[in-house]
Length: 525
Image 1 (tube, rainbow, N blue to C red):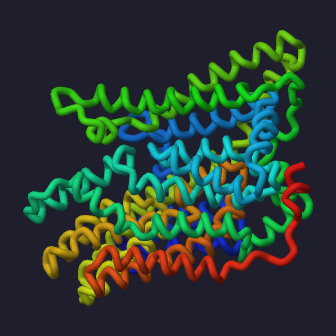
Image 2 (image 1 turned 135 degrees about the horizontal axis):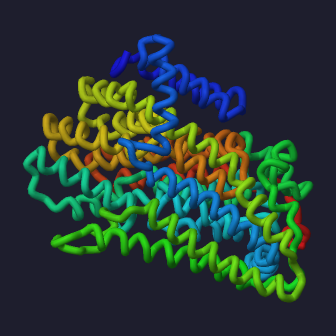
């Protein structure tokens, strides 16, 4: 059943169950069992072995520790602990009060979060986990739901990283472009090609545009409207049914001598240390080669850098905690609670991530992505429709497999082959459509690691995040799709971009502010 239409069944079962039952771990578990049975030809013993291997592979590969996954999981736990200690020290409260005097509107708080997401472009994992934690005090004060916060964070993680050449994503994509060009005997620079593809990545610009319009117009639709209405009217930024499991740090004691530095210093150290370790790990990996910035980021071990940066950030946080102990604002009991509650707050995302990695490994053995890639390759597509069709197919592959990087690896070479066999001038638009579609699918998928980490970093229930952001992502994808139709029919990148901006202008006009809105002054108090 590998590399056939049957390979679509297990991931679709898991995704549909997630959306219908709202029970993530159960749904992923069913998907894992289904995928194992399909790969194991419905042999019970073999299927059980595959399930065991999938979970073991999260932690051990080829007899050695899977340090990539382990470092990511440890970073998630450390970030939860840092957040708990910052909250106990009063840093979260002090930062929120300081920012509330400067960011005075709900729109401003959302735009601020988006800008933070754009600035932290080096890695999507780091972006997803940290931006939400920094923005949360401000968005909470302005009664912005955690679902909205998670949506903004997710819309500025992978969509920004995919157009940033100096990032883990940029280095990875440039490397694949180089292999595609070599296979097609194209002598152009892969780095120059990446830069030329940036304006063609229409989903990035439409996603950012939709976020901006939603923030400025203060209009919501679909499930998000329920969350935002509750937040505005009651101040409950989380669904009360999930508050106990998600916002456990709310139970912690808060020091009365908290300062802004109790939040800013740990986060700043975390950020700078992580960036420094990313550079260091990439630099040391390059032996005897040209040590350009792109090459350094391409060789960097991001997960190790996150772990080391997180460890230093945690040590700095604990050192700041001493002041509160000395002044008897907090006690040894709170010190122990900080570790317990901090780790507990991240357990939902921690568990979902392990299950998601397990199902992705089995889906990879099923060959779901390979099958869909071959469908694209073998279909007789109209040249003019090629960018649009590739955008949709890349989106479906990334949505089904939960990985945009996997879709890049599968479809960028296929896109290059199709363009070379039909019209070589389409090679950059087609590859840009692959990048855009893959990010779109990754953005929507409930089994995507960036989707999981965005909800975790924003302290939002995962299903709330998936169901509320999906309609907005589909709007952005629809606008991007019109751009790719225009690009394919005309061959003009500028016309494609113009269509995206026209689509955003129409969306802006349709999003009329509601007549009755809570006064901003009341919200800010």
